Image (cartoon, rainbow, N blue to C red; front, side, top):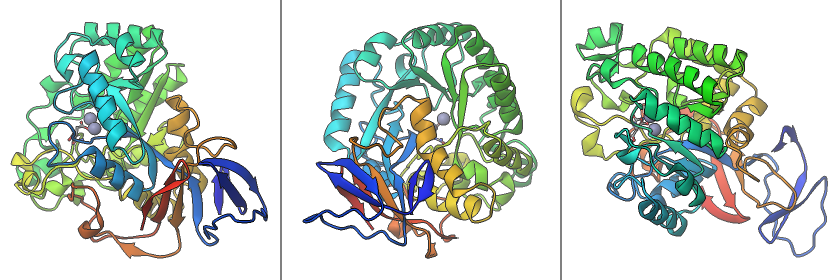
Amino acid sequence: MFYTNKLINCDVLIENGKFQQIAENIVATDAKIIDAKFQLVTPGLVDIHVHFREPGQVHKETIKTGTLASAHGGFTTVGAMPNVTPVPDDAEKFAKQVALNQVNSLIHTLQYAPVTKDETSDELVDIEGLAKLGAFAFSNDGHGIMNAQSMFTAMERIAAIDSHLAAHVEDKNLFNHGVINFGSASQRLGLPGIQQVAETSQLARDLVLAKETGVHYHVCHISTKDGVELVRMAKDAGINVTCEVSPHHLLLSDQDILTDDANFKMNPPLRSEVDRLALIAGLQDGTIDMIATDHAPHAENEKNQGFEKSAFGITGIETSFPLMYSRLVKTGIISLEQLLALMTEKPAQLFKLEHTGVIQLGQPADFTIINLADEYEIQTSDFLSKGKNSPFIGQQVYGQVEQTYVNGECVCLK
Ligand SMILES: NC(=O)N[C@@H](CC(=O)O)C(=O)O
Ligand SMILES: [Zn+2]
Ligand SMILES: [Zn+2]
């Protein structure tokens, strides 16, 4: 089964790393045959939000292990967040980061530039200059942009060059040193809670600024019911806003946190069941535009210290498709076509990534072969990422990625 906007049965001919022909029963002498008769062939998956940790924290992940894990998860294009050390916030550091990505990536790694120096100051980076050096979009992910003037000017300048601003919406003054969602679970476990308004108040501010500037404003890892409602209203009002949701926010709530286990600790935190259901509804009605993993690997000893002391973030790139397929498609919540669009062409289109997330004749053969038939268990030992922490370990899923190809070359074989 082959996916190009719709699912069809056909042959595909690849020559010199490019798609040459798509038709029933192609005859090509001397061609190497990859038999995917009982499998799904999809454009390589696209994840607009990942964290590799190079340079600076290569004990958590390197570009090599991160892109290998991505290929293992079926992804051929990822957007790498700039919260590495040093933050690539000037021309020299940014050019170095791009060169490092190029040398070490097995797949296409697109690089975000930060919006402000060090991701925390109020001083803007050279937005136009970093875009020329290859920044495909701008984000201070990991930190909310607290200064409205910085955000407003950044939006104006990013709009002027037709680029994209991806926002980690979080007002740090409302964050309350929280480690878990504020609510019954934080009370039950006696842990400091993160208020939902930390997300929604900054999101509301940003939507007003986005309306004024016309920038493409993208909401990272949306997690609250009110956040989805704000985005829905903004879209209805014609504001140029898109948003992503992560598999963990779609599948888990704070009620799933039974013990002080930091495999469930990430930012934003797992919210209430009411929020989770609103995220599902937002996915179904198109308010949410794409699925992004927020793959945030950490070392074992940074995650085994309970909620108060462990790092925020979980590994996610190797379990995204199987979880989404098993829990959303096989249960009838969305169709397989919808899921594939959310993980391929929609992120590519909205971030204006050419020849990405689609199968186009004459264009690079980036594709993934997936086994939809057999069930398997998610196991830490199968992860190629250095990050091993996931709340989904031990779950039974379908949709194992068998092979991933970039420019017609196999970059990952199960
Ligand atoms: N999501 C997380 O919990 N952590 C991310 C930062 C981020 O996405 O905000 C990280 O870089 O570790
Ligand atoms: Zn973030
Ligand atoms: Zn992130």
